[in-house]
Image 1 (tube, rainbow, N blue to C red):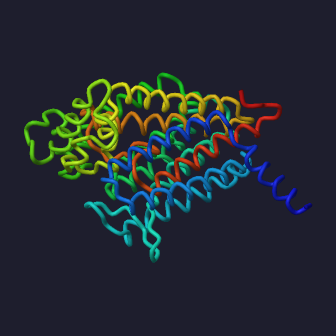
Image 2: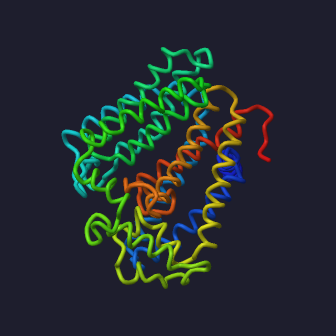
Image 3: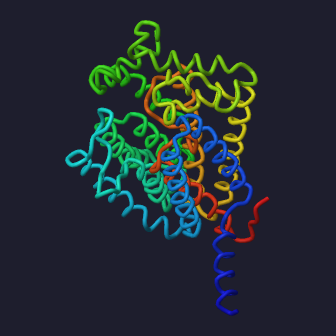
Length: 371
């Protein structure tokens, strides 16, 4: 009896670290993700089995992350960051290749993408760096933080994986932004990036990446080549109308017109089957989750918690913005999945771990209770 009570008490302590409001939003989003993936995969039972295994691992990662206090996270930041950098370097020499990119490490049957780790490691490292600094940060501190962000970005872009490099850079930038960077420096950074864009286009991109940018300007210039995905994606979204064609009734999915429909372009499948109304509901759920994340970040007990929480929340927004933008033909195709909807194990584990950190903020602030 005592053992049963002890187990129950331990389970309750673990669950009490979670934020019920955010958890409800995540459960709704993951449910929609499972429903959509079942359709986008062509009702592939094996893929769905792997998806639920990924979800189980991601849930455990969320529960574990929610137990970690901010001072432990701050102390671990430099080690997680350095380990992530070492793995990125290892990928350049021994990484496995898929889809023309060298992004993965394989250990037997276990395969993962080290760049996903940096989506957590970079904001943790930058937030830890600013923790004991005077805020707003001085110019030298901004430079140091920028270097901490730039190193993994360059390593990830070298794979090449511009989508993940963008997300990692966004995560680091949001920490710098929340630290209180002056507007003059923001304007300077903007013009510096704008000036560097032509150099990046001509010297920093592969040929296929440059073609994606050009295709964005005129998809019809190569209807059966680089413009095919965008054209089929916009057809799928538009053909859904207001109410959609119904679950499992999307032509783009059933007739295999749309490549990568279960990963990067799953938003198009959702739009075709559930229509404009479904898209608005889905976007509303995403915005609700982002709002709650920012709320929890604002309730952090210290500077590290607030900077990290704010960065993780807005990076989730960038995930959504980039994927929806590229699927609807507003942004170039950069290989960013729709968060917690697209198929992908490492991405799901990273995102759920990030939300575990956000939920952990609930108990890190003395006297705070979820509203």
